[in-house]
Length: 149
Image 1: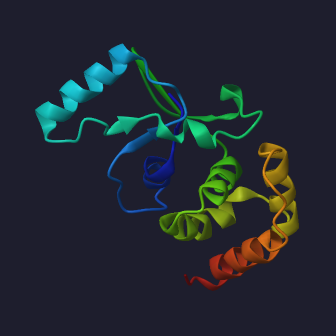
Image 2: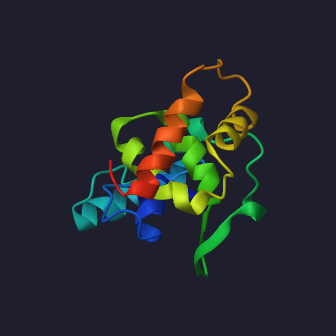
């Protein structure tokens, strides 16, 4: 299972907590049933593990590029490189993603905002060009260095 979103952020000490576990791995009906049962047993919602992040998966993300976060006899949890998670959050563009991108920026390894935007269009080649995207990412980088949001 490849995890992203808030659970990825929390596992990397970039966020305090999360309400769910977002997976890039498509969950089978059998696994969804198990997730639902575990959720009922522990007072969690039925979709506490979900695959709704699959729509944000970047082109070319391979499991062998991911880091091992947890391994058990029947479960392997992987996390994408931080730059890929940053790009996914940039695509999603929700309010909480802004703060997550600020927290992620120092770990991404992009040379600058322009390099991040080039990686974005490589990861999402069908996205329409946004003339303001470099400036937005530059602001995120500045906030990451300055420690603000």
